[in-house]
Amino acid sequence: HHFMAAFWLASKGFDVRCICHGDTASGMLQSPIAMVPVLRSTGTGMMSHLKLVLTLWRARARFHDAIFLIEGSPSAPAAILGLAGIPHSKIIYQTQDYLDPSRYPWRARCEGLLARMAHLVISNEPERAMRIAANYGLQKTPMVIRTALPATWPAPMPDEKLRRELTAGSGDNAKLVFAGGAFSPVRCGAALLDAMRLLPPHYSLIFSGMADTGPAAMTVHSEADRRGLAGRVRIVGHLPFDRLMQVMASSDIGILLYPDDGFGNYHQAPGRFTEYLL
Image (cartoon, rainbow, N blue to C red; front, side, top):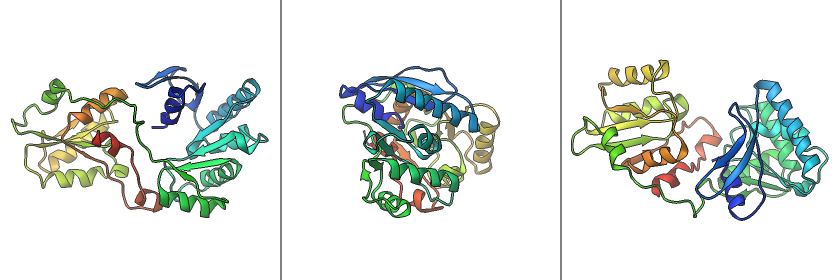
């Protein structure tokens, strides 16, 4: 979802270039509505931020009329240095994961400075937008644009062969519950397994975004076995976005939980729900 703004703008005819952290190679990123070139700033920790600053400086020198849309607080430290001195009208800041400032104090300080540098600030949820304005001393409340797939994005279609694979051994009346993300505390994985114990045995739970082999997968199956859920938990691994949406479309129920551990997670507006509703 971090690239959705880029895809949407490119689909409207804008010349879009993406700069981001990442260990994979630079190149073209494709979606059903547009393709965008991606330049990845490799490295970890402080080195990654310094490389991103240098990349932004080069972009400023090359693209004099560019508008810079910064997505997410992890990019804020590099952005306030890389964009220092350019007009406010050339900076847009968008956040889809605004959390309590006390969770990441240094990142929040940088995010607040970037928000005040920006001509436009975008949030994905109204309560978050009002808190951002209050916490960072903004003169106006950020614009609210919910996290969602563009209307022109093709609706995913169920895959009967995939469904048969996922429901194998669960009977003719099998039901699939798709969990949004990996088994982890931030996705309330243990609570999901506890809830599965209340459902009939023809319901199975699917986790994604994690390796389907190795220690993490062994932990999932061990926790499931301990609850009497042997054979009722599937792990589909790390999937390309189009394949992930096929799994969603082939499932019966989508569920995405967040712990009630602070303001940001309490006021959630997850875009995955829009994918379920397609």
